[in-house]
Image (cartoon, rainbow, N blue to C red; front, side):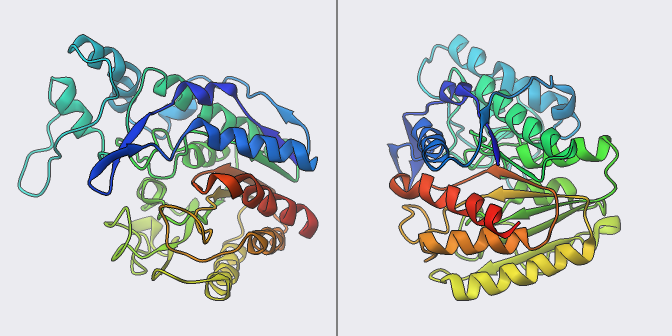
Length: 343
């Protein structure tokens, strides 16, 4: 399996994030991609190549223009306000308030985000652009005939929506790739999200559409971030009704329950009949993940990859979460090698 990777991910290197009510060292850090890349090479998974540049047009097919302008200029605005440390938001336009974009950068940070744990740094925009190109390049390889490809995307993407960022995500790599496939002529695309956290951004982007199916296995929003999307009764609306499928789980589940749901999810995808499958690949379902509460073991990720291969669909893997850094490369490549074994 070919892996697409860019060193530009290192340009986004937050030192700390707001979590558990305090500022702590960031868990979404450059080391994550470096560890995965090392494991890819160590196991001989396949060649590693640089991404091609796709420009902003495919990104703008998913994200609003003023949101992209904000991300591109946020750091400069932050510096101009007299601060040179990481930029975090302060307040949000909640119920009863008006969602009007403020003029000052502090207000803009709040307006275009949905959490306070996703810092913007000097290199965030460049890293996010490169991450989107990584995903698009992997997708084009599959569109052009490859059985599968792995986009080692960092920053991740599935929490980013049309006009907001959060959850360590700035541009929604999987959604950008799915829309690009549609624009290239694909009639149906499925996105399977197996990250521990619900892909709220991806769901919201395609919630009213039937041409991109979204299927997600994740921790229930009653207990877990992002808290406000991911319930099983969210099935899509309008033209999209029936094309959004959520499998929320209580804390503490293992592979028996999770794997059974994965099998059901794969049946949903098979019935839908996509031309291409995009997998939002999070391995934060691992039992030792520091910010998650599922109990999957390293060997379980091999079986998950085999199961996904059973769909017999051209498949693009996009890296999302996973923060148990010692096992991160093992667990990620286990999914990919399991897929190769099952293909």
